[in-house]
Length: 178
Image: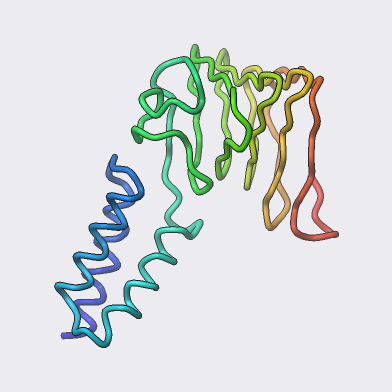
């Protein structure tokens, strides 16, 4: 019975991650589920495991631009929130996303042909994984593009790159390379 409850919890966490709710709503739902499924002494352990699953790369969610505009505006994204560190971010053809603030992030970034990402002066974006550009990427003077992956990041695609800003390689390993 405990095994079945644990499997229900894991499946629920995976399903929750695919839904278009904010991360705080998902965490609240997992807390309620843990409390209802398990005894007082054991639900806390399973709750910690659930949080690890929610924040792991195993359950990375796609977050696709649905309108052009500010990277930081949640309504411009399919998940309803600005991209998170675990998100696979996709900027489709014909959309332009402007990074206006410092500290924006994503798990990986894909820019489709005729799509664009522009880093404005004073802004920064941190990419934890790969960067595929078939469109246009611009880093204006005073902006910063940081690769923060634990492993090697791959930059691919035949798009255009206009970089007047700073690129930082913070890969977590002296042997890591782009």
